[in-house]
Every structure is written in structure tokens, then in C-alpha cells.
Length: 306
Image (cartoon, rainbow, N blue to C red; front, side, top):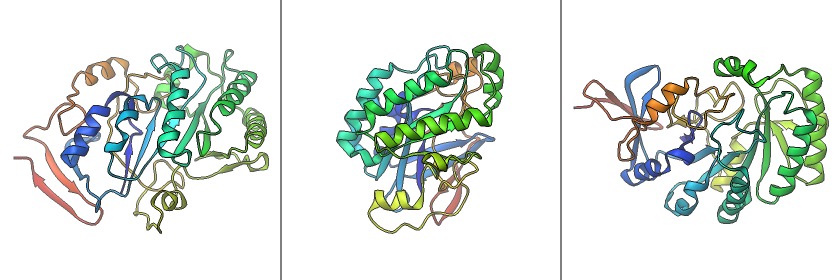
């Protein structure tokens, strides 16, 4: 399986100590968000884990401990040009850029993917703003990443609630084409591949391909041998390989106004207080009412907690 750390919250930024505790313990427990007493226990063994996909806005807390990760892994680092009106608690961007460069030097740029994701338009963040920001980003980091993934904002529940607050306007097809055309030229100038994922619009005529965020060919490059992907659905309704997310919803202090996984700021603050880096589960602890299912690639076995 491919562990996803994480699409639900930023484990690298806020829970890296817990992650390394789980690596040492040899397993991690994940609570089902739709059935809270259903626990999936994932053995962190070579036989069970093919690779780890880290998705983060801040890899800095992990940089000094990467040598402790015993599995193949790659990083997707999201770096967008928004300020605190859209991303209230995202770490200082120049330091993130420096961290990405350091990360690429440690593990190789082929294992680092940048995400300019999502693209939204307001009076402040208009087309010209994005072109300037993307040019600066690619100029700074084209030697420190394998490619850039871009996407356009989706109107999730949280995004809709914040739409008026940040002055976000709807993206037209003409907007997307203008962005694709400009970004494609920037990528071509710096010889950096740019792609979309799960986007209905075709920007291939501007040099931007629609591809999976994580694919069979990418895994084979990472693992250096043929890869037989697990069966199941991908991260989203797209061509991405299926992953197993070890995070939790409403557990990320970035509080980005466009995020689909965190939609209640009060709940986020309260839930993050439940975190214990020594617990087997990200938030809180296991209880007598919890039922554990040991999740293996080819073997599923259920057991009571006590």
C-alpha cells in the first residue's frame, strides 16, 4: 500500500513527532471519520508499505529526521502566493522555499513535487498577480523539484462559506486558459514540467498535461523496479493510485480558507488539543468501544480492542 500523510491534515507540519513515534512502534491506528469506533491498524512493515506520500505546506519539521524513515517516500509541497487573508497560519514562504531546496539536496529533486494548488481569483489575487508569483516560484525552485502540479479551486463547503469573506470570484474557462497559457510558457522557459490532476479542462496545447499526482510510472521510478498497483479508488476522482490516509479531518492549524478537510475552526482548535504524540492514533486515544481491523495489503483481520 501507499501511505498518504496526509490529505486530511498536515502531518509533516504539525504532527511529525507523532509520525516518527509510529515508525518506531511499527504500526499506526487510523479512526474511520464516518464510524468513529472503527479503527484501522496499519502495520508499518516492508511487507505492507510500498511507499509514503507526504503532502505538506511545511516540510521543515521533518528535515532533520528523514533518515529515520525506512520506506521509500516522496514529498508534495504546496506553495501558493496567498497572504493571511486566505492562508492565516501558513509558515513564512521564504523559509519554506529554503526548506524545499534543502529537501531536494537530501533526497534528490526527482522525489520533490511542487503544488501551486489551488488557484483562485480575487481582486487582490488576479491573473497578473498569479503570473508574477508563479514566475518567481519557478525561477527560485526549478532546480529543486521534479514538476509542478496546478489545480483550480473547487467550491467545497468550507470554500463556499469563505467565498464572500475573501472576495473570491468564479473561475471561467477563459480564466483557466489564460492561466494555462501563461504558466505553460513559464514552465517551458525553465524546462520544468507542469501538469494538472483531476481537472476537466484540457491545457495540453499550452504544454500542461493532465496526469496523476501519483502513478504507476512514478512509483516504479521511486522503487527502481516494476510495480503492481493495489486495487481501489485513487485520492480523488482521477487517475491517481489508491492510497491509505493516516490523517484526520479538522486537525490542521493552517486554517486555509479553501480547504476541503478543515471546515470548522473552533473544532480544529479543540481537536488539536486532543493530540498526544505517544498515542497510536492521531487525535486522542483508543477506547474500550473501539474495534480494530488490522489492515494489510492481502489480509484483513478484525479483533476487539480489549
